[in-house]
Amino acid sequence: MSVVQQGAAAQIREWTQALGPSRASSADRREALNQLSDDLLVNRAGIPPALAAAGVAFLATFLRHSSIEAALARELPSAEALDRFVPVGGRKSIRILPRGTVAQWIAGNVPLLAMFSWALASVTGNRSILRLSTRQDDFVTPLLARLAALSEAGAEMARETLVVSFEREDLEAHVAMSRAADVRVAWGGLEAVEAIRDLPARWETETIVLGPRVSLAVVDPREVTDRLLTRLAIDVIYFDQLACSSPQWLFVRGTRAEAEHFTERLAVEFDKQTRAIPRHVLDYGETYRIHLDRTRVLLDGGTLFRDEQTRWTVSVVDRPQDLVTCANRFLQVMPFDDFAQVHALIPENVQTAVTLLGPEDTETFTEGAARRGVCRFPRPGEGSHFETPWDGIPLVSRLTRWVLRTDAHARGEQ
Image (tube, rainbow, N blue to C red):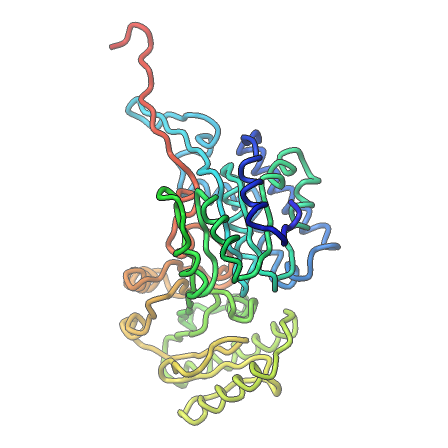
């Protein structure tokens, strides 16, 4: 459970060979994660700053019984199949087993995300190797220590998790981690996930790539309440738009004037939530980029809503401006009157479209947008909630091995 920094390659090989079979049931594992959720919500003292700043409430919510069981139910015929054969009809039974060792490379922008995939790997009985960059604070080991103190199942799940930290250039450690894996999970930017994907691995190793994505939101102002407006603002600003699920563009149904009127309301919430939700301190380069992008918007005929500093910016433009960097709470708002206009602008690497439309419009928009690559259509306030499928990938299925059995006839049956 303690983080390994020196000799990571040798430690990975030794740990993989020494670990015995798993004993905790899936039900016990789910209960252990639920207890960890309670502990994180009640005992806030001692939570690592890197985790507290990244949104520990999102993790605690995901670890609840209801969330984990919903994730399992979306993909498995029965969660009981994680512990025994269960009938599935036609004299067939299914047993769902862990793949084995899940090696996970933690992203630098939102490291919290790897804890969601770790939870799914662990609840399905897998062992995990979690790799931290040497430039990242170790927020994982304190979490595992909390988990281990709560129950025997929690202690076993912590023992089944190895945390390593090594440089990006340590090829020996990367290769050892890749070759030890039955499943590789690569979180991060394009260069990082391509490098992980290209590492040598056994032919049967499953590789899950959770790479760079962008997100947007589509809103009909007639559907917006004050509460939903607040939730929309939080979806955009919570992770400073570093998360793939954070909207960078907002399409507002109506004319340019109607979009500006809506944006004026949204700007009030941006200011309010920016004061309420802490953010990292901007460096000189980030501050300069915000000033530059604000100028670009004005020169191109856009309308700006912003604070007096560089804490947040909402711009209204006729179409997305590619040169504008939508990060650090900088949102581009575009009016539209037909969904075809939005569909035509959906980028190839899209992930989420936060959607607030009427029922019929939701059906029309989401069908077309799904065909263009959108993976999720949450309501405002749910944009940053981790769920499976994620990036269009059914994670539970990819982390497990399915066994089909023809059941024996009862004595005397044909």
